[in-house]
Each structure stands twice: as structure tokens, then as C-alpha cells.
Image (cartoon, rainbow, N blue to C red; front, top):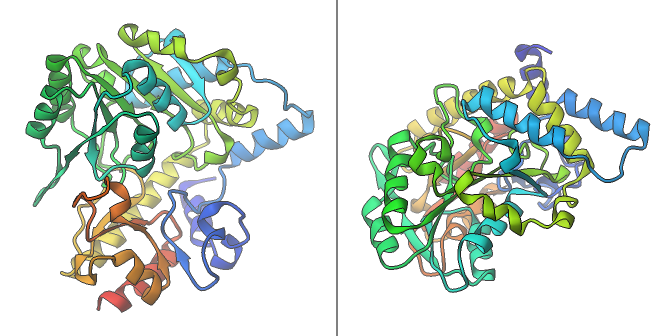
Length: 387
């Protein structure tokens, strides 16, 4: 299908059809509520993925996975897309990104070691670190007129005080920032100075905006690669988190992390996820390109809507489909107000920081990865409250 045909298919999405889905985004809201909370896209499944899944069913092919082609396909994709050369021997399958991050944190730090987190931060980061007894060393992002910026002085102070790793989200969830090569290099220099590791979640990278380039953390310099581990997946870019597959990417200096991945853990990667990811990395028939350009259009519409409302502040995202909206004029619990009055479910900003932190107060995370007509309805509902 052409990009225009795919965009027309996306435009045709209807709320009543989406409510038939049994996954969380649409099934966990009341019938009169529009969901803009969970990080799922509403777009129909890529035709390449449909074909692969049907072929698996036709062959009754649901045994244990063979992993070599999967890892090679990932290495080829990042070489083409991100100009990043990775050694397939330094890759490991994991069932999802959080499993890969947990394996890296367990191997590279000890219980009681502090881990730097740039807040607002993806909420499962906070839960995982608490579960692993790694104290969260919060370094709030700086909110500037030009967008969200890393507070490198705070990161330096935290590392100097003994934090052993930086848990990086690149591109960042929830702000949508793609960290620049200069910012990544600054992190690398701090990590090297204080002997820390950098563990980078790069799951949103396939959805970079049309005017953005993405450079993986480990690809920015040899210094960065000397202490880096990354995790990636097709789950966000092609909207298949339920298929359960991801890749843990090590460097020569961090390959000891692979020793923590036992054979049975690799077998938890699902056969459908392996097969679909392999096919998508090889050739998705233009689906990702179409989604990127459609998300650009959604960002344009959201930007125009924000520009008309001085009571809403937003720094346009550079990747992904999550908007970090400053709506503090609605009061201390804006997500609750929007659910009650607009019948729109968003994620409270306070979920993205440790208890007592000011990092998410007055903010909500808004998912705009739906059809443009449904986005119009979402914005109209939000506007009815904000106006």
C-alpha cells in the first residue's frame, strides 16, 4: 500500500471498532471515555506482520524459537536505519525491554547502589529500581523556553555521591526528546569520569519525527560504547508489545551482562514475536514510513491546538507519540479533572516521578497515536474543559 492509502486506512478508524479490542488501552475505560493514556497506537496491524502470523498458524509453527536470523535482522536494521554497527555475538534476545533493562541493572550494579533517573521518567523504571533495591537518584530535567534539557550539574553531583549507573530513556518518555550527540557525549564523559554505566532504553527510536535523526547512545563515541548497554524492540514502532520480543545490545566492554541471561530466559521470547520482528526489520513494505509521517501530521495538529491556548504548554516531541502537557491551571490533579469533565483518560504526571517529587506536578501524558478524526474529538473534549 502507498503512504496515502495507509493514511486513509488510519483516518477510517472508528471508536466503536477500537472498543472491541481486548488489550488494555481501549478495554480499561468506560464506554463514554476516550483513551489517550497507555502507550499503544490505534493503527491497524502492519500487513507484513499479519502475513507472518497467518503463516505461523497455517504451519502450526509454535514450538521453541530459533534466534540467529532474528539477531542478524536487528543488526542489519540498525546498520541501515541508525548507521550503527553492532556485533550479533554481543546481542541477546529478551522477552521485552524491561526484562533487558533489569538484566543489565542486576549485572552492572549491586543492591544499594544508586541509579540516576532523569525525571519525569517512564513509571516502570521507578518500580523496577525499587524492586531491585537500587535507590533512585532523581535528576529532574530542566524546563526551559527551548524545551527539556538535562541538568548535567545535577547528574555530576549524583555520580560524585556514588551512583553507579544512569538509566537513560532515548528517545525520552514522556517528553519525546531525542538527545543530541552533544548531550549524549556529555553523559558519556560524566559516566567515564565517575566509573558509571549507562543503560539506554531505545524502544521509541523507530518513531523519530521526520525532521529528526537518531543516534544510539553507544554509537555517539568510543567513550560512550565503553560503558554502554542498550535495549530495543519492534513493540513501539510497529505496535506489537503483546508479541513479546526485544534485543539486549552489549558492547565488548559490557559483554559480561550476557552471562546473566540464562538459556531459559532467551526461550521466553515468543515465537510469533521473533518471526514478526525478523520480517519487519527486513522489509515492512513502507508501513513505518507511513506511520512516521502520520504522526508528524498529528504533532502538527496538536501544536496548532496548543498555540491557540495559552493555558497549555507543550514542547513538541521529537519522537514517539506521547505529549507531555503542562495543564497546571486545572489544579493539582489535572488528569482526574480531564477524566471527570472531558471524559478523556490520560496519565497523571505524578506517576513519572518518585513520591514527593515536583517533577510531574501539573502535567499529564497524552497519547496522540490515533486517527486524525479521533484526535480532533479528543482535543475538542480537552478544549471544552480548558476553555
